[in-house]
Length: 242
Image 1 (cartoon, rainbow, N blue to C red):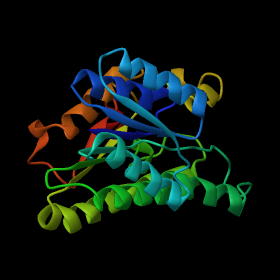
Image 2 (image 1 turned 45 degrees about the horizontal axis):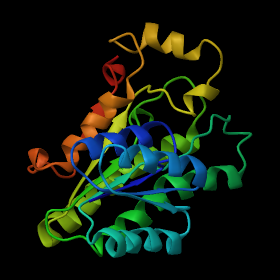
Image 3 (image 1 turned 180 degrees about the vertical axis):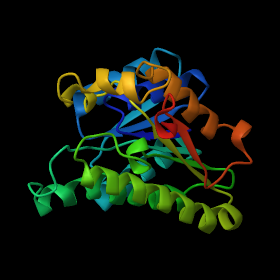
């Protein structure tokens, strides 16, 4: 049984479908209720159970409710995919403290609150997967101080939770760093930006396909990755080595 946050669009939808195809029943969390229901129907069309729960990960009570709903509806939590996130591209001198804090609250604090809510309920063998970004490892020409800070911090938190929980609780904690994948965030990039990145930074020369990232999430959820914890898996077409 897997929980996926940010399951109303983009990579969250692709991951939910991939996990369902791999045999998982799902509890899906996101703020937007209608597209979340669409994801649930897509999972159910594959013959798996799906429970949609409106969730704002910045609210610790909502995170506890999502985790408890998984226990009540499906009996256990085996996997958490911490996918909920937002981004900004605002010059640092113009970014307000409120804007900066909002990104940290969703991308970092929200992931922490979901991880702890699930870890309290997970049995030995659980897997937590945090979706970071290559912007937590490098830069890519846009002013993204808040986003970069949140995603870099998420990698540090991943390592720390792994050292806290893997030996004591049997819960593996790993992170994925996606490169350029089509999302609502990439739809807001300046004209020509993605094309420039494909030419100058992405060795494979194209954006990633959602199913390519989803396959990595399935791997980290599965016993096949049972000897991995505290790891960062980069799926970026070569951006971070250019």
